[in-house]
Length: 395
Image 1: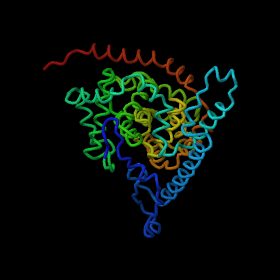
Image 2: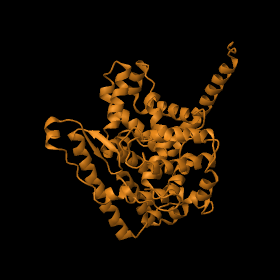
Image 3: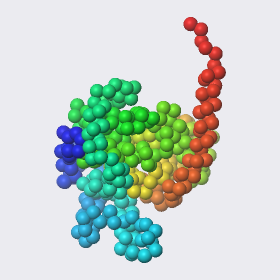
Image 4: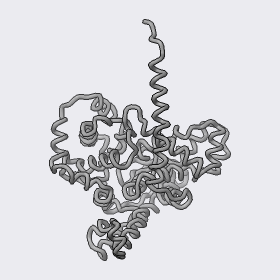
């Protein structure tokens, strides 16, 4: 189902996108209000009640409307108009109004969602992945996948172990063809950056990229852009030091943006990294419904990494009143997981993320990261020194 290298696969999600069906639970399900199963437009099986189905139908109508808006923009401004939105200092000084208007328009459109049929082109063009790809020979990905075809490393062994556990039951990913495509992308990247190699979490990110992008090669370059230009350094290295940095940044932001929640969770001795670590390692791919995750990624690829923090804070903010009433550790996890699993309307989440949490910039996150990097480095060094000072056990 998926063509390797630069050849486009049969774009099976487009079969859903071309005529996104209305979900119609049976009359028996409506009467009994029982849980029903249905497939979303990216082939994931979703469980929910009739209310969830109604929300998904509303979301699908919004997707159709956004498609009409984007295609209307293509008609009036020309194909690929969104590529003419980079505001350089030269443009600012010359007050090239049309470019400024396009940039403002594009930001608003992206926050409302990129239509699934346009996502591959918009992501690849605007994220920086296309530019990264242009710096190497056209045959780079083909050559790399061929060169590592029969290589056996700790990374390839872990990848092989994780393939069947990556979105099990999915209509395409959980097939021999899906496993093979995902393996090629992950193995290729593990050799491109041997310091990173492979870490659990990357498999979910790469799998979702494969479903959206047109080719394996484009999915590979999107993954490279994320790891090399968006996420914190060492996010996926062996000691996960970058992930520790992100968690400390998030905890500090939670205190600043949601002080009541932070204080209450502290009184419960609840460490938010118990739920948020997976968010930052998998970029919400394991936690949120697929279309909600992809709406987050729409903004991530255009505005930057601060979007991840906005969304993580929004999840807590949406549950503020309920969280303030809990007295047990486990209830916090239950509330957060229940919320993330049923966030079928991306607008509910993103409205809170951008309107109630408050704006943040990439520079804001960079400054927060720098503050925490030295702290995390010292903590890891202390841990290493303690381990080395332990007496050897006798056989």
